[in-house]
Image (cartoon, rainbow, N blue to C red; front, side):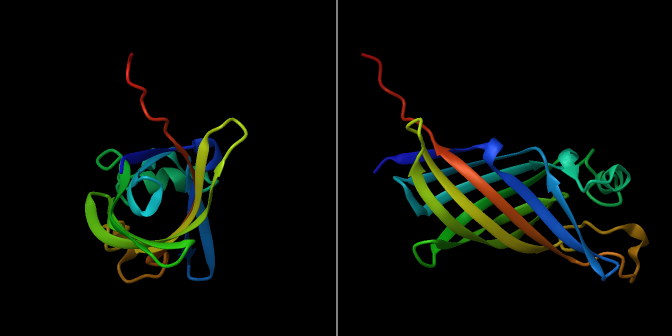
Length: 181
């Protein structure tokens, strides 16, 4: 069976996160610039190899001052760690729609294993003849385990440790190259 490559459709995809602030509300944000690709055996999602990269400099929480703070050395330290990267190691099919995607998340230079939940919204042919696949992806990570800890936090509860991740992503099946005649 041949491998199928799927390219991200950024116009129909978004990546968001939320975290507790002062332990009373959630602050949400997103990454405006990111890439992702999937490679499968045929169209079997259970064989997927996923690669995702977010440009940390594109972080947006709808507050320029907070965004600038998140980019500096107190948090993500964008100058030294400009990307967040996820590479899958395996995918477990739970049922026809649900998958567990296991992999390594690298944030602020610290790589840790993580499992994400992915729900296949479907695989369809669009009106222009392209095959598309859509997924809702969720997961939780510890920011402290990845070294995203503000030096002044010393025991305080300004921010929660658990970051909830949410993504709606759509991929387009790449056309196979046609051999020259």
